[in-house]
Image (cartoon, rainbow, N blue to C red; front, side):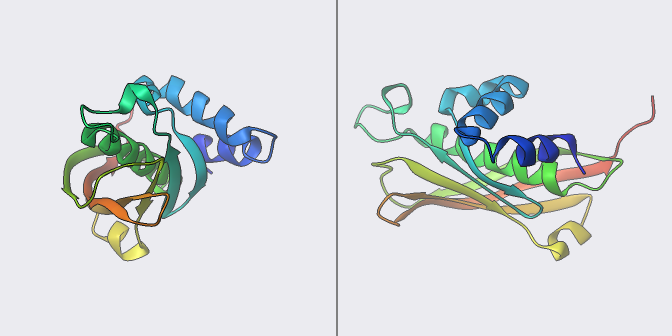
Length: 154
């Protein structure tokens, strides 16, 4: 089992475990601290987290900035990739294609999903992502493309 997934499995059952794991994850990938992810689910082929709507991620019209939403989606994708990538392989994001569908007026749930068939296409793996606001409206959807290759020997 991947170390990140094992850590999530251990910490998530603790009180405030989602916040604690989100902090640990953000220390490993510091850029994600900008959105303060609260991880709700991490398992092979699926990850889900919450990006809280707070002052530091708002744009000039008071909604969650589009790039902050993309940061949340990329964080979810990273959790999914960590939980899904086969032993002896590594992943790198290769590109992102998203559509902005509605205003991000609340906390957002960011979801990343794949299937076994998606990973059969390695080295190129497409991860489907979307962000939903509190009323259930999908605000962003898209695809993050991964490059999955064997980990080079040292």
